[in-house]
Length: 428
Image 1 (cartoon, one colour):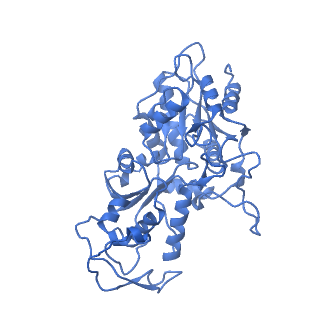
Image 2 (cartoon, helix red, strand yellow):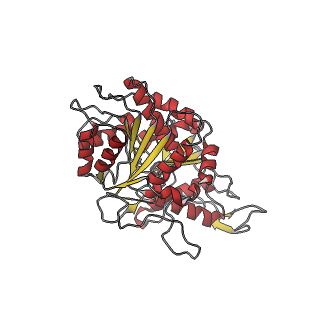
Image 3 (tube, rainbow, N blue to C red):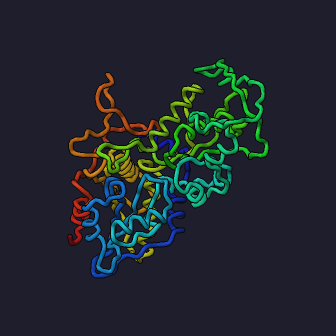
């Protein structure tokens, strides 16, 4: 847990203020007026496993919003939807939720896993390789990145780099240069110092501009292609058509979102998430270089930055509605103990010592309609002998077992909303 706090401070100093300013730049949502006192609380709702399973809405979600939306179709309290998904446009996700839940969800109510990348302006002018699926270029540009290259574009420029799938290997190739000795590591390096690989390098594509960083927005479709080309970019210092005598370290900046190892869809068992892809990339990089892959930014739940960003949006919604009372209490509802509950509890812990901002608490509420179930053991600290449930969180997050314990465990999101309204003294 301490490692996570240190990492957050290292990645983005002053990001709380920047998150508030970025949230203020969005358009607002309309909220219901009436005799009810203005709310001093807000809701952070996960989507997959809480409101929907795949493309099917969970019935309890509609019941929950019957309590949160008035007869004019306006929300009675500020709400943001905080998801670790990222392979969709913000506006498209809002439209999808509107159709499923039966009321108008605005784009500025949706926080995707990579939304906080808007705050990393120091990288926005760099030429970035982007990995994931869906509207990658549109998402990257919406985040502020001006110069992006997709994995498919890089593969088209250097077709001999992607050779795992025999059917996709180029049938003819240009003449290649003589094998280039490629020493991984330098004198004094630990691990595999002195290891030399001889690779046949393709002729350099001098007209292809160098890559200056990597954006990992979500799990790609062809993992072997993305893993290979990302490694090529990192090991060549952004020039995958050439070879370097020494693999550079520190490597190019890598920004990643969504560390979920697993997520819940229609299947009975959880599916691989982007965290699984990151685990593969980290393992390959460590095995090849003897060093650890480092992130210039790591976001999505349970990152503190994501919750700070969400807090800024809730405050902006309340101010736009004209509610003078600050939003003091936050309630985060989720189905994944390692991302939703751990993150909410970590943020609550952070709020107890923070001197700025209005929020004073963030209560975690765990539902049983997704990754977590009453009979499903949650992630726990591995025992010294290697027994017990494995740790499913990201390696950079550290681990504090107490943060996995939800403040409240309920059956579904409807029960969670009833709990919140009751604690706040609102009519059910």
